[in-house]
Picture (cartoon, one colour):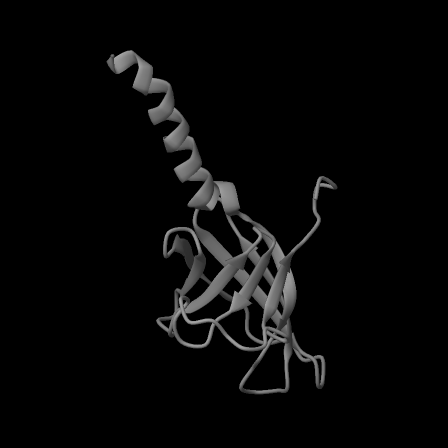
Length: 132
């Protein structure tokens, strides 16, 4: 009897891992625009490494000046629905809601609280391998 349920257990395990991505499976490069305190908006390039580290570069859209680069650790939280960036410099973490595996939307406060308008708060996965 136990043998009949082993394939079901394996299938459930695979489904859970697909629904809850890990850094190695979700890693990649994202780009887009995010709000900034120092200017109207920033163009952002975010590299999420498979090792759980991230690097972020940004340029102010107003004057094209580069913002200081930031780096830190990232993780997938809230049962695979959010990405949290925790900077190395001790600043507040940022959370992004994951939409369709290719879009990150900066949240306002908590990742489980939806925002009304995601425009100017999104990062899209870069097409780096031609497969997407």
